[in-house]
Every structure is written in structure tokens, then in C-alpha cells.
Image (cartoon, rainbow, N blue to C red; front, side):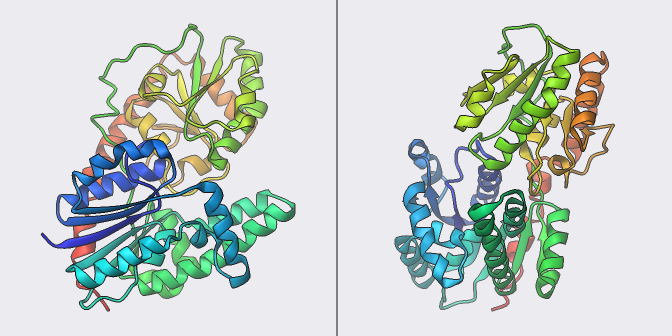
Length: 403
């Protein structure tokens, strides 16, 4: 089998976060076609127990432990160099040597870099033509722009600097790569506008969902003790966009729902809740679970899933998974952007707190609310199974290298 180098900023297994869901499914698909060498970081010591799963499907693996505290200090060395802090955060000299040696000593003729931060390892010289694909996933520089606009003071300055320097790096990477991938056509279009010199080789490779895992025919015990309507949010609760979403919903939207439906509950499901998120659990009707073994019972028994994201990039796996489980989803425009489904028919989209609350109250009261979930499942089956979304991947990798 032809050999391929796969680079990821976070170990691709288990698929319990948005980026890991995508990287795992892409890696699985590539391991069926190529002999894969995997280089990745491990930022959670708990994930070390999953190394064997990846070693079982890859020819070789290089796992690099990443301490967030040390990585932040390392990123500061980039301040005086006009370089993105992200590159310093994800730089390791041992991984760099491993990549150089692989490209020089093994017949590796394809490189797949998952996220722009890993592109710094993708362009070492090799004694043969190498096709290099960068999966940017989202336009990360625009994410930092959003963060910069949302923050004042030193944090805002740092975020705006990161946006500028990272966009410059993203453009250089896109120009040097054979193809640049994004999670949705909307993200691809945005990057084409930001990097017009590379527009001809920018394309969308959409996210998918595991239709057999997120299957509404499966039966789960009800995790909710009370019989009242439950609104559920799922996601990693140390991720700023998710934190902002639940803080906004709990403080601005949910009180209006509780005023009309005192029996309504808001459940926040996800690992590593920040102190601000944990404090939300003190409010009447709000529960913060922390990490759970399986999110599916919470989604399956929810009255509706809410996705009140105000800072978001790309396609939200949490929305696709809820749709796959045939649940009504109420999301902001940012949360549902890039999903090829019809608002009002396959999900609900509301842009402000008042309308979001009214929609949730209406869904709670609607005895036929399951119908939108059934249509959502059919939409996901038709458009978002991983086999369908990754069908173009081999073609992308097989086109001869341009270098």
C-alpha cells in the first residue's frame, strides 16, 4: 500500500470532541486505502489509554504529550517573531525530526495535515513528489477575529494579533499546498475571499455523522429524574464558544422559558466545565453534569436540543448528532450555518434571546414536535453519513502532486 503521513493537533481517538470526530473518521477512511504514519499531540493524559486503537490501524505512530501550561509559555516565544502563537503552542522539535525523517527515508508520497497548526510539519523536502493536503477545517483566523471583537483590553489585542498573523500563515499554507479543505462550502467561500490567490484549490469536505451510533431506534434509560420538559446542550465545556453559549442561554433565554414553564429544565452535558459553567448549576432548573459516558441517552430523552452558539465556525457536530437522533434542534444562525437543511422544517433557527425563548416554549407545548425530528433524521441520512461526505477524499489525494 502507498504510504501517507497524517498529522493531527489532537489524538484522533476517542471521537468525543468535534475536531476528533472529524479527524477520526478521516483517518479511518485513509487507513483503509493507505499505510498511514500518524503524528499527533495528546493534551489529555486520559487519552493515552487509546493509543493501542490507533497503533492497530496505522503503520507507525508518534504521540507527543502536550502540557497546556507549557504550550502557552512556548507560544509566547512567537510574540517577537510576528508569528502566530498557535504555531508555538503546537511545535515540538522531536515531531519535526520524525516528520523530516519519514519524508526522507520512507516512500511517503502523500501528507494530510489536519488543521492549519499542523501544516508547519507538512512541507519538509522529500526525494520524491509529495501531494500535500491541508484540512483547515474552519477558518481559524476568523475565529480569532470574532474573539478579538468580543474581548476588550489585552486579551482583545492578543486575539486580534493572532487573527492577523494566522491569516497570513493560512494564506502561505494554502498557496503551497496541493489542496485546502474546509468543513463547509460557507467556510470554503469565506477563505476564497480571504485568500483569492488560492481560490482554485480550495474545496469543502463536509462533516458527517455515524448513523448507526446515533440511531433513534436505539433505546436508552431515561437519565432525567423529573418528568418536566428538558432542554439539552452538549459539548466540551472548557471550550470558550460553548461556555459563552450556555452562559448566554442560562442567563438570558432560560429565565423567560421558566417564567412560562416553571417545570422546564436546562441540562448542560459535557466534560471539564469551567467555574462559570459549574456555577450555573446553582440556578433553579439548571443541571451541569460534567463528563458523561454517553451523551445519547440525554439527547434521546430530551424535549429539544438547544445550540445557542454566538461564536462558531464550520458545521456543528452537536447539531448533526441531535438531528440524527431525530430530536428537534433550536439553534442560532451561527450554530446551523453550513448545514444543508431547511429551517422550520428540519431544525429551528432563532437569532435573538426573545425569539429563542418563544421558540423553545412553543416546541415544549407542541405535541407534534417529533415530526421535525423525523424530517431531521431523513435529512441527515440523505446528506451527512460519513461514507457520503468522504466519498471525494480518495480523488483529492490521488491527483498527482504539483511540486
